[in-house]
Amino acid sequence: MKFTLPLIAFTAWIALSVPTALAQDPAPSKKEQLATELIAMFKFNENMEGVFKQMSSMMTKSLDSQNTTPEEREKRVKSMEIVLQEARKAIDWKAIETEMAQIYTEKFDEKDLEDIIAFFKTPAGAKWLEKQPEIQAESMKAMQKILPQIQAATM
Image (cartoon, rainbow, N blue to C red; front, top):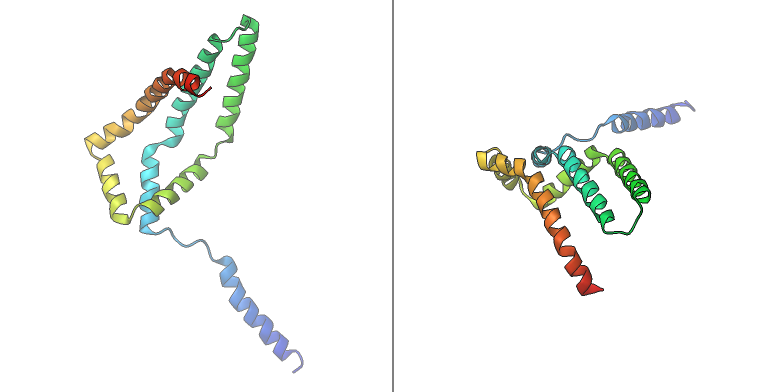
């Protein structure tokens, strides 16, 4: 009889705790699934490779304006490439996509997400997705042309 109450309490604790401990994250809502689908359409991982190439090109070109020896320039180019390569390795694309999906879940309702996905499945939407990396690269080049004016005005 002495052990009955503690045994009952222990059994109740196990009965209540184990299902909670074994419970998995709840299934994503339809809205979360839609946001994840939309983010996957953006192909961040693939498109960022183009951004890295553009950054490498811009950084290499920036060395042209500096007064360095060919050997020093080559060392700097190699250093920049190492930094970019390490950045590529360090990026957790799944985490980025998860964070982006969360942002889209917060900013759009289910209907909006459905409509946006439907647009990207149209020929015009598919073309927009396809051309976006080129547009970003050209935008970066355009900004590079404008930056000296901004720097001159602010320094």
